[in-house]
Amino acid sequence: MKILLPVDGSAQSNRAARFVIRQWLQRGDLPDLTVVHVDLPLSAHISGYLGAESVAQFHARNSELALRPVRRLLAKAGHTHEEVTCVGDPAEEIVRIATKGRHELIAMGSHGRGAVGSMFLGSVVLKVLSRSKVPVVVVR
Image 1 (tube, rainbow, N blue to C red):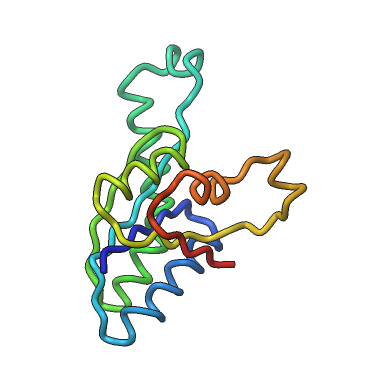
Image 2 (cartoon, rainbow, N blue to C red):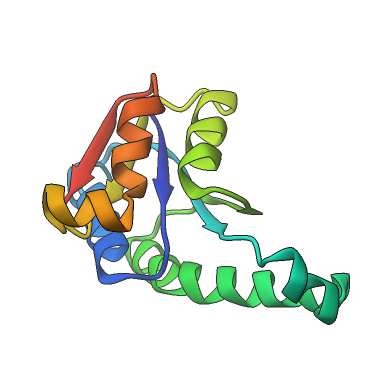
C-alpha cells in the first residue's frame, strides 16, 4: 500500500503518524510511506524584502520543524519513508502529490474545530476531502 502522510508539526499530524504506525507497521505490513510538509508561501511584499535565499531558508527551516516529530516516531518504529517538501496551498499540493505519486491513501490529522470553525478558519482536511479522488483517513 502506498500512503501519503501530510504533516505540519502539530499534535494532530503526530496522531495521524501514530495511527499509520499502529494500523500498518506494527502488523508487519510495510507500506510505501511518503511524508509531506507543505509550507504556506510568504507574501510577495515580504519575499521582496528578504530575497530568494532567505525565503528558501525560511521554508526549509519550517519543513524541518514540521517533519522532525514524525521522523522520530517512524525511526522508533523502524520504518523508512520518503519525504517531500514544497511551498503552496496545502490542500492543493497534498492532492497533487497524492495523485501524481499514485498513492492509495492519504492519512491526515484534523484539528477538529467543527463546522462553524472551519467556515471561518478554513480547513485543509475539508479541502482535501472535497478535491481528492484518493481515499482519505482523517485522524482526530
